[in-house]
Image (cartoon, rainbow, N blue to C red; front, side, top):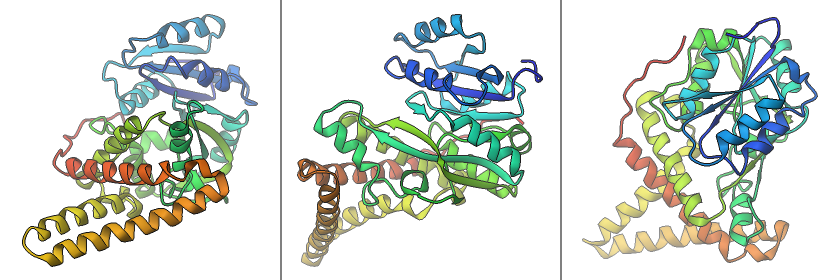
Length: 338
């Protein structure tokens, strides 16, 4: 355990093959307005086979408050629980290695938690950036900012401080973690949705503040974006068995869309009216996608006019199919800390 008088904040960063991003991430943490000597920076690595570990070790040689620990269970929820168990500072911030953080990020999180004991988790805006300058990479980043894409959450489009259902990454008081327990390690994704729901059930508020800012790098290709959305969809399906209050209406729209397509297609095998319904459904979706596409291009550039509709359809269907498969893969309860 660390010295409680030395560290005020524990930063937990799960990693797995993040050689392209981990250095930028850690350097943004070490460039905070908050006194970095009061931060216990823990990188919990899940068995990286690239240069992630080497990069972290080199940084740790120059910064004694940066340490690397092994996360044998590999997943992010396990990394969080492990980081909490080997630290004892009163505040804990879970960060993502795929992101960088505004210089006032830690300071603003800690100030909110110190001044508002009713807050169980605080976070802010997460700006989505492209990994490179290719059209598809920039379109993937843009997709996250569009309501018709995957941008319905406050942390993507919110402009005012308010109570919310989820924030990216998360900053917590340890007393809250001690009360509600750790994250569920049987959830490979969506563990933050379940955790936020548990925090709200314990009587705390999840608070969004747009002055808390971070930047996350979107997937660089259509296939990687679809794979990510499919995995996210699986987590939503599994949450049906864990905590349905952790699921928002926006999470279920892709599922409803995919089920409607399947239902109409099956009906079309028996009656012409099923074909009419399928055509009407796809036409309605195409028109909605077209309007969203034109609005996005008008604000962000017309080079996205042809790629965005393809992205819309692919990520929505991937998410919906993932949700269906998630419903058939009920998670088994895994004990957490606390």
